Length: 491
Image 1 (cartoon, rainbow, N blue to C red):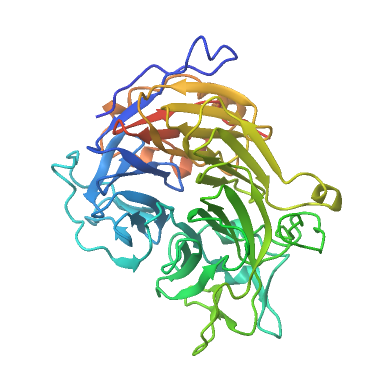
Image 2 (tube, rainbow, N blue to C red):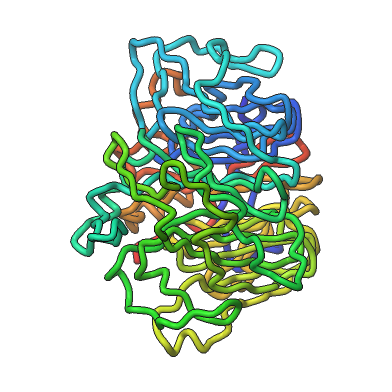
């Protein structure tokens, strides 16, 4: 059951008058290790160190589903293909789809959710029925606690194939519109640490389970030991024409990247040594461009061809911003900047791509010292303005994503924070009147029934102007706190 707490807006005097969380959610019996908001902002997924996963309704602030997903703790969650992908410490990735009763069921932004079933609140002692064997399973390497990165495949209509079978971005394609449905079905790429060695990354295809790229970063750091892979982010850069053309030259560590113009697959990898590195995939004759039944494309090894380790991948740049292992990696929605935290007291910001020759001459990394060491999580809000970190000291710290200037310290948890997530920002941003209203306290959601989820409340897709931009944190204390700092305003 939620524990409502009065909510106040942040002010310059935050230190003297700390902000309280709007709601505290309790259902897990073990520390919370992972948090994820649904793509439409109406639901929150949480995972615990005991292998349980919960899906919370943000209208009622109660768990709709809670089930045992893994024998090990939950490392990662991703909403995809009508359900949720769960990554566990048991070296498995599962896909679970939610039970449907038929009546009152609706599909929302990639998730088929039953809104007309019984209203009993599940718990670890009474988990939700209907969750038996997962619908899909992949064997992975989870020994180094690295969370998976799930990337939905690009729509075919945004890729033009040339005579050599290589793909390039279609400048006339509205990529944002074309990718609206990529989470509702089709295929995806899943990046995880290599099955054979923790220092490298493998990429698998969903749903075929084929390993299409293996041992990414092998031999990229000759003479330097990077240690285990600690964080990964697989992404496509913005489509061609969305930004000025970048410099054409590229060398490891210092050169610029043309990621803003190229359609090639990219991956950011954070290492135990404190390095963050960007790699780019260039298709060669060993790979073929295939189109799926869902009209999506990706490159895979040609039939009968055994590709080499790290084949087709090149190191674009690498930076060492931390003295200790990278613990968490966040990338803004435009794939323009990346942020990392580690076991040390540094907060690092990286420029992923260069928009001009002049920008390429500037330092790629900005390192900011923080008051306390040990951060387990970092997250950037969808509008690219607000950054948050989760500390081992239980503190939630807010920063300007642009300058890394500290904004506020939110104190509630006495034990270590392990998970942090921002709710998605609507593409249309927030209207000024809504932003002002968001500073106030809403009516008690506990009075709402479990069957009126379609009336927004937490932020339905049909009334996104009323969506509340939550920031969720969780950790050793087994509870989840929902904050609402600095509501987003129009650009």
